[in-house]
Image (cartoon, rainbow, N blue to C red; front, side, top):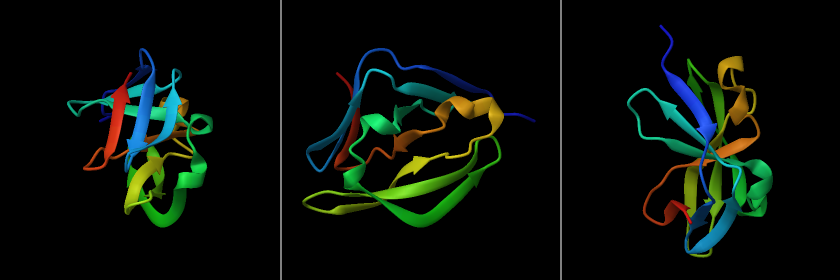
Length: 114
């Protein structure tokens, strides 16, 4: 049984902030809706300050999207462990999210439409 996944352009401009710093801003973000879960905004990798991110060894596997690799965010005040994920070789059905990054919204990390 395939989960209902929809990927559409995220309307407007989106920004990601961590520890008060802007990590990236994009008008080319994608919105992924998976079943009844809240929408997730995926930012094009080239719109993110990759110098703030540190790849980790952590991975997870989604039966619908493939294997996700993770990054920690290094901010001035703290490190947000495994707060960013990316499907570097996603399954064909969700190929649009290749070369995109998604962020776990938590205390200190905000994904906002501006």
